[in-house]
Each structure stands twice: as structure tokens, then as C-alpha cells.
Length: 358
Image 1 (cartoon, one colour):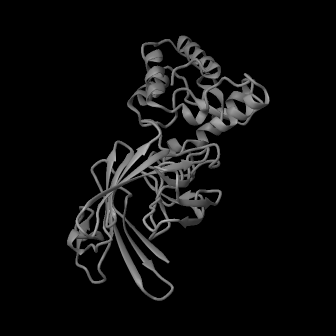
Image 2: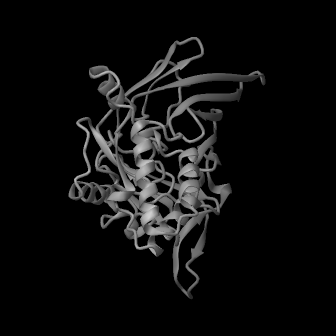
Image 3: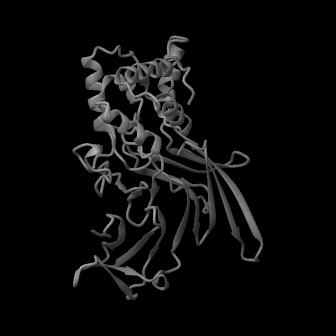
């Protein structure tokens, strides 16, 4: 059994873990002013704690630990925007490199540590991920296998083999960090429960993410949710509207893509959504849509079966900073709803032809 405690911002700050042997562990979690988790650690059994008040008289909501009460299992994190950049634990300092600046698919891990003789050491390991960005293997610089694992359908690790004792592979679905103590995956804005395929706390964007506040996605093969902000209900509505308008659907596995992204927190996408609202254009309007191959693997398979049949960008690859900038630049100065929709359709055609820059 596990008890979860949250602060006033719905952030998980403490977990009590009751084990089968009757023992109990208490873990604490800390966040920066942007809501990013910057530390966690196991508490001493009888460690002191200071009370966190909700600001009302006699309404203490939970106890949080002082840093002196955390044992040597303390782990700290450093972020680069929404990407985990570094992790410091008792085994050393781990630095993470991703496939590109707009991706959450890990590419490499650099471990720095000091050996028992006081000599500084460094090791670079490489992640080998599948088509949805889950690490399946880790190797060293010479290609020697260090770690490999297998997963269940919703991202839970089914089995793993450490070829070397020092292999450290904490990632699961894209931008999910597995907490060994609870089994939960930290998913940036909230925590994901892989046994259920659901989040344990509500979507911070509320009804913008749909009526189910705990939904992860329709599936893990065609969707990624690196921020813990759900948009699958919007995608369902978008597909419904596309079908109602008889938008031609390709015969490969596809995703209904919002040209102006439905719940991105990027300031450019927010500004375009506000502009659409003032013009009376709904985010799930068929004009704001295009069918794209769900993944690069789908696109490659389509072209393998029918060479040149699929030139469209893969849906899993389009949500880049370059994409957002180019969409914004194309639409920001258009104030007529008819012309706005016309430009949306033009962008959609370019995405399907693969000529739109992402």
C-alpha cells in the first residue's frame, strides 16, 4: 500500500510505502518555481519535519522534510527547459543527451564519478530506442551491451538485464522517469501509473485535455505525451469533424494532426488559439487538420510497399520548435477567418507533401 501527499499545486511531495514485511519507507519530492522536480530522497524513520500550511488558520495540510532528514539515497535533478539534463546520485553525475533539441528520445548518457582512489572517471553510454522512443538497449562506446529490457503495452518495464552493475536506465515512455520506490513514472507535469495506463493526478490544463482528467492517451504506439498534458480527446473530435467533411483518409495507419496544436503551452500556439477563438474558428475545425502517418516506421513501411506513396511528415516528428515557428509566422498576421482557414489548408497540403519545414 502507498499513501500519496500533495501540496497546494497538486504536486506529489511525499509518499508513504508500506511493505509486505511490515516496514515502512517515506519519500519526499521537491520542485522548483516552474513545477519541475529537482530532488527526491528517502527519509529517516523518525526524522523531523516542518509543517506546510495552506495559509488558513489551523489548516496544516501535510508535513514536508528538512533536507537534513534525507538519507544518502537523495537524488537531485537539473533541467534544460522540459528536458532532464542532469541527475546526481550516490553513483555519480549523469548527463543526458537527446536525439535533437525538440525530441525527448534519449540518445546518450555521460556518467562522471570518482573512484575509491580519488581518480575522476567518465563513461559514455548510448540508448537504443524503438519506434516510439522507449530505450530497449544500452551500449558503451565500443558497442558492448550494458543493459536491455522488455516492456508491457503501457510502458511498464517487464524485465531487464544489467550486463554491468553500474548500468543506469531510468527512462520509459518519452520524458518519463521511473521512480523505483513507487513504480510511478514522473511525466514532467504529473505522475503516470503504468499498470493502469493512467495518471494518478488530474490534468493541469483541466477540461482543455478532455473530460477524463486522468487519461494518458488512446494508445502508446501512436501517441506520445512528454509533458503529461492529454490531447487525445481533441484528436478524436478532430477526426470526427474531418470525416464529416469527407477529408480523404490515407490507407496507412494515421493520426489526425492539429495544425495549430490543441494544448501546447508554447506561447506561439497559445496566441494562435486565441486568435482562432476571436475569429470563431474552433480548434477541432476540419480546416485545422491533416492526416499524417502515425510514426516514421509507418511511413517507411508504406514507402517500402509502394515506393513514393507516402511523402508526408510523420506525426511523431512534427511537434518541433521549427514547426511551431513556421506555423506561427504563416498565420500570425491573418485576421480574416476565411483567409485564415485557407492558409491552414495550404499548410496541411505542405505537411502531406513533406515540403513544410519542420
